[in-house]
Image (cartoon, rainbow, N blue to C red; front, side):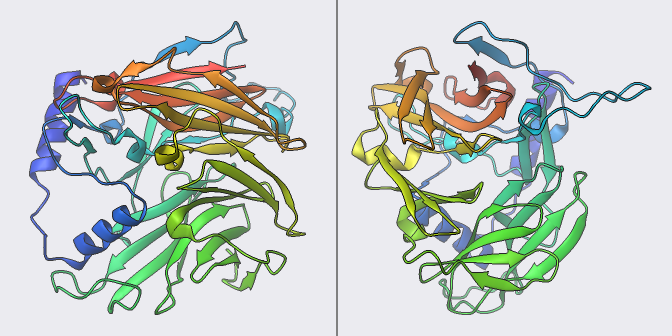
Amino acid sequence: MTIDDIAATVRRAADAVPDSRSDLSTVLRRHRINKRRRTAVAVAAMVAVVAATGATVTLTQRHEQPQPPAQVQQTPATPAPETPAPDAQPQRLPLDVGWALGQDKNGGKVTVYDVRTMLELRPDKRLVATPFPAVVDDVRSWVALDDGRFVVLGGKDLKPGIQRQDGPDVTDFAIRLLVLTPDGRITQQREVRVQGQDVELIGATATTAYLYRTPGRIMAHDLQTGAEQPLSALKSVPDWATTRLSVQGGLLLSVPEQSCDLTATDLATGRKLFTVHLPGLPEWSCRTAWPARLSPDGRTLAMAVKGGDDEQATVSLLKIDIATGKVTPFPVSGGPVGKELRPGPLGVGWVGGTVRVAWVRMPSPGVHPLSESIQVTDVG
């Protein structure tokens, strides 16, 4: 499939989207985007996510220093080799294309086509997309588990086409927690909405989903039984609407949108391990201090950040020592990038002791496949 074929496919998909401005799903999507401070309106400069075609793409790879090639999982020959140690297995690298949002050189907003897929960068640098299940209208958040499964939180309008008042008390609306197989089949489906509350998925393991529920509670949701228990050791939990929250490796990670301070808290004891200021971020862009991934051994947190100002933006990787809170920055974009290129991080993942950063450098205004804009940088 050529790039022209891919671009044509995306344009047809965009043209086929119905005008549903009065639908509840549209209102709720707008509400969710506003809460996350991700304003996106359709204008001339667009980046089209075309990985849903299943095409294999070639990505640009940049190395900050010499390092061994990334490990690729292959079908074992006979006899089968020994299973690699857990910290040698490449982490899955989900991509959040919302971080491609930005401004073009004329100040116009940039958006991404709403392709209904969960996008992932494989260890061999292929873009792979898993479609959203039909039982949800949209996906609020999702987690890629190490065993290949997905944990997904999505909303479903039970009376589409009927306009209703938005908010936590909206009627005829479901919020569903799903577990999907690696090929996208649903193995678990459960309604997790409580009338009058908001709920978000902020982390998951093979057995447990971590749900943030208003007002200020984190619940451990058993994926098998649906039973929920509050994490009682946490004396206080930041407001999800104004704070980036993630549960990984037994830690609660939080970054307020108005303060570039990362706090790591032990879930079992409620003890704050550290609070550290994230360098290189102006106060207005603290919300760009994401995505973040804990190393398989639990010793180091890797966080991709977008810094600089409107005219000279940068993408950097911060490595944070969990034991000491020490922050070590690494340049990713190779220096300041002009506003017209609008760089931003898409995802991070560990490959042994190396961190792989997927980021986007959007081209000139127009419709472009993501494969033309995505960059991959390995930081040792």
